[in-house]
Image (cartoon, one colour):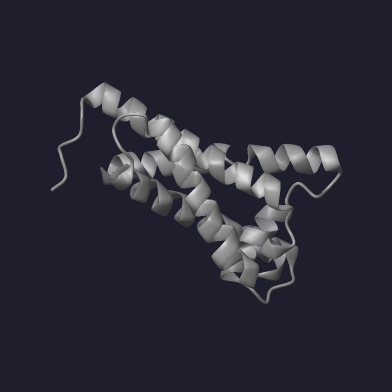
Length: 143
């Protein structure tokens, strides 16, 4: 289950930034704005862009893998993608609402593209987990 969650989190983490990236391109915004904001989670007082970009990698990877493992543990084996989307909404509420509102760079991001990133994360993680279950058969029942 952990291996499946790590894989789901990594794949979803790579793909889930598409909505905010497309939005930034269309709106003429900085496409790395969300990445810099993610770096501010680790370095909240840092102002140098290069350091914030470097800090974003372990932050985003750690969050993606962590949420992937959680989703592997809690998502049902049927209808995994729709439940993944719902989980993505819950993660968005936690990440953006509870944590993000305390960090100015995250608070300054346009909300809708960030929510869409989270929904896509949940959908992709759910799809990866569903595919792994389909390949290897159902996972053992948790007790």
